[in-house]
Image 1 (cartoon, one colour):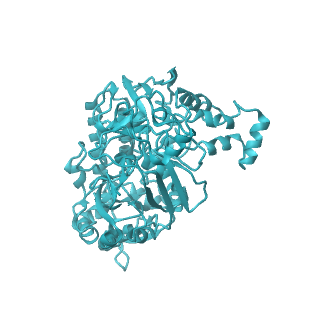
Image 2 (image 1 turned 90 degrees about the vertical axis):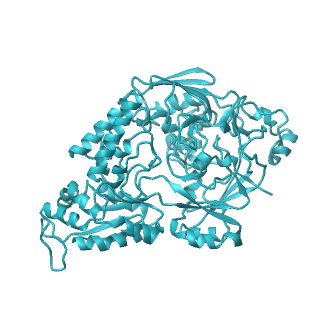
Length: 627
């Protein structure tokens, strides 16, 4: 959030609440159902005060949007792209109410959420405070569904909030200490859900159904028990149950498994345009599952109307050639990760000799200095990328040039001197430096193997590292195997994206800079220890990592923006100096292919997972097809 204020009001014109015009046009797809009386008219389907999109050029109803995805479980991407959230990011990465009419924040720890009166789920059932109560009392505090108690994401300093239903459209969460993570969690690409469709899920909960009936439902759904049944039926992010009511603009119609999924417009969606016409404009979304490696080819022949997923910069030239012939345009959107390519030394490696070496800052610094980033940029990205460390990007108010340039100048002499200073002076007949136990310094950098881009970067790095006396091998793996090997400490080096949020403000969490998550490839066991409150993983035993954790905790309790800004810079300085991850390039452009008839898609945008939800912050419900 750029500005922390007591009442979070809508700052974007196109989502300001207003009543729709009485004579608003019904979506033609729904007109027959309305005429037949099987669906209420629009005025009865919308909230009393819907969210209004003020568009420069209002759209028209109709059409089918075609998407390509690599896996059948990517039905979840419609939750990402649909981006209906209690609060969400706007295009400036400020947080604004969306599903909610308003949010009031007191002392950074008391959050009063105001729902839109008359808002309904996709099946027409009212969306009320009962849906929040159900989640809190019957899921988060149910000993069977939540055996460890209230989920960790709802705890501050280990303590859950006090939850209160004020009235049918108002709920309140109050923590003892500030909770600056609460609203960003609600706005995430994969959002934190604090509500569930109570009316739909109660029949699968032991509190509301007799044992015999519930057991029949468990057996009918082929689940182990009622807990598995409730979880399977109510997984809103997974988006694999066509019967589960939704608040998203399009609702799943096709039961999995399938190679083609159909999503139809939600007749009760809460957004309208200036003329009071209910969004989304587009009637249906058809998602076809294809091999990730084939998707660029299929996109190039015009098989998708909106595509960025499974496309990389290396596909750009090929895609441009098919523009006129196949009726699409290729844009290049900015990416906002801290690094497009970063190498992660595993400080939790099992090998004791390598682990000791990887934990020495001068070793990591030497490896960074021995990367010719300019060569990588010119050869693979036509010089359009930014060369530097894994840190915040120039668009962030926290950016400082010294963070991006620390230990990134190509300097083989200085890199060699750092290794010599660590006592790594002995070499084998092939010229490779020797480890303290006499082994030659050959390193395997593991990748998820999902595209050739990472391997191409590593191939260029291979040559300069070899001159330094270190031989680099690349090993592609299946993604789950890749992550599990890193988590277990079997991997010495891995390659992945850098900071997920490369454009933060001081009011967004700096937890990516500290060992707080097992998914952080440079210290997975330390991150797991933090995530599980010491029940798994290992406690960090490196002073700088301990300092980062302390600073992250300080940020959580900071009361002013000045304090949060200072903490961010302290953490950025430590990461820049210690080179816990080795950034190579950032700001690589993402090809975005758009059907020439599809309107209201930005020509230039920011393509990022969180914050951003890829296309989500640009509200695809406002996209429309010209005739």
